[in-house]
Length: 389
Ligand SMILES: Cc1ncc(COP(=O)(O)O)c(C=O)c1O
Image (cartoon, rainbow, N blue to C red; front, top):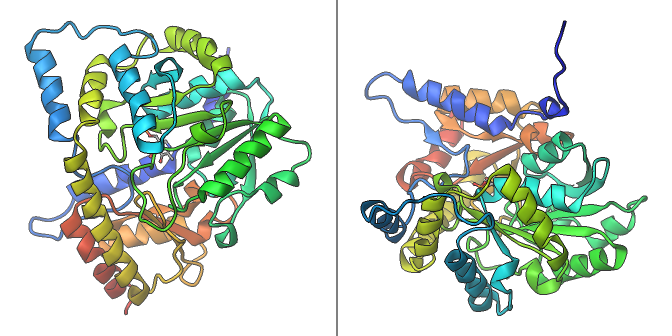
């Protein structure tokens, strides 16, 4: 008799992971001496954790520390250090008990969604969006509600858009800077959205994983300053350059502290101990991290200069993160095919927009520029030659 397969199996793939596999296969098949593939498909800094973080992990291992389970919400010293970060970075007092350390931002989402919502609840988000928001909600039996956003609102939701939602959603996910567009919500708009959510009883979840990586036009602001009932998600993967260490965090409202703690105890026991040791040390490595950030800024400037001449001249106002969201409607109506040909013909791995926007993604391409700086410097030229410019 056929066995039942659960609802989780309905979660769509996170396509960028498939693009990574295709790029790996292409790189492995390159003849000796061929120009390397330029990896612009993944939001993973090419340089790893800051030295101080790696050294702290080595010290812990050499000291024979047991590195066992920690408290479900993380080691107290890291929670306190993250709380201090809110005071120093944003001037917001967040008590350490409201910080939950998680296995990356990815590990934070199921905890936050399960604590805040029930099956069948509707959770709004801008489209284009980071695919796992919708895919995790769907796997948990919740319903993503997509708000089509374009350049007129910097690909971000607005209070006016939320006002039009009937019925009101149960939750709203925002991200500033966002992935894939790299655009930001100015502080006053983020605060207005947070106020609207409080007034309407809509749980706000603010993904702030790209904080630390903004390029000066719009100030970074945290939802933790705007609303005590908002859930903030953050991570050591991006500015802190520690993807593989799998450490992120939540700033939780009081009413969700114990629910998230109980869920974490049952679902993960604790985040990885060695990652927590390294993450705490990383918070004191600002100089090295700011040097990495300066490299992304140089790559961004080169691309914003070179891509328009190469034929990619419709790029979202990329205030932050390390992505460029390019409208390629004048070149194709099939971004999946375009990305495959770009890999084959120009040796550039990029992410097709269909991953991020189910209706309009076929005419968008996301380019990530946190990879190898010297190679990214060649990208616009290669694209231009491939497009016959
Ligand atoms: C917007 C956004 N949120 C969350 C994540 C997940 O990050 P991690 O699980 O590595 O902390 C990513 C990764 O690319 C992202 O782009």
